Length: 448
Image 1 (spheres, rainbow, N blue to C red):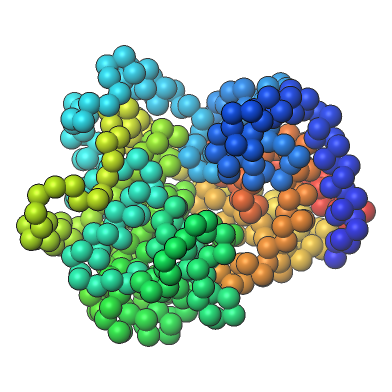
Image 2 (image 1 turned 90 degrees about the vertical axis):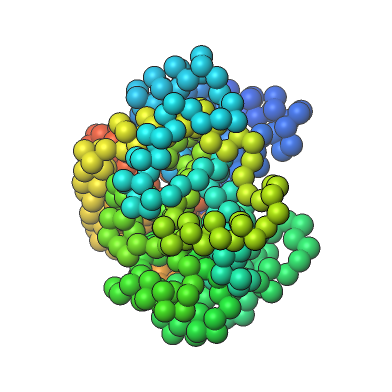
């Protein structure tokens, strides 16, 4: 429906508008050209669909202020890291206290036991370990799964993302597995030990696991990193049944789907798994992550360690479970990630999803909306994708990049990856109304 020439024309004008409105960010980008490779301390910061990345001055609640003085309604929220708002008061207070008491001691802090109890009560797993990132936690659970099962293979889903873990970078192209093309410097073929199938394909799942050589299935209950892909009714229950029947560990990576409910998607809606990974938002933006596991898995881990010589296991780093991370998690779990916060987030997200559907219908756009809990996404395709291949086919990078640029020029910040929006406890109804108005204007402009 949207003319490609129109997209190119609007991109040129919106880029000029962006550059004119953000001279200090542009100057900062030039200043960083010496010292930082490509002008940023981490290359993902260049992935925004704008001529140069904005430079943040500060962020609080659900708003981000740039060095040019623009106050943006933030629905990106650090791509989930700040899903509960930037610098909530309880977190800021806890970090200030801990900063004066030591940041990393290689010993448990006085809050360690409380954090363990909070994790166990909320996520229904009795045993926990901490890491510094969710990538590291996913790498740890894969290693443990292989160690205690004696099996070498990992099953993941086409289009998945579980952080910087080499084992999961297997895609399907035309049904044929291949190492993800963007994986830099990969020297061994991950397909030798990793299997990728399509999400929502029950027959492929059973066929892959019945061979008996898969140590674990690593999955998000709702795929979020290739656009949102919802599970078909009964698919997650089938995953639980088949993994249990074949002696395969089921690992839920809920780093993103913690937006579904207070206990994550699996804890809120079921089914539970054998292991559980959570990162990013669990520390409110302070680098930390956790993985939990059942009594049965804990026993097998201890039995396996007993067969090994003492020494470094290859799991964890010096900064894992540092005192600052413990303080951050304590504040988030005990105060910020409350049932009341989730009630606000999910209720406002449902309103947002419904109002975006109204825009789509009113303008006759062949788009669709997916939402779970506090996470909402509009997809530039007439129906929701059922797997990674369909999600990849639905992506229109030129159109989506233009929409993002048009929205930020009007005061609304979305995540740079897909059309994802998060509603935080600090997000207001007025911010949702502004986002909807901006998106309505964008749709009308695209179709003009």
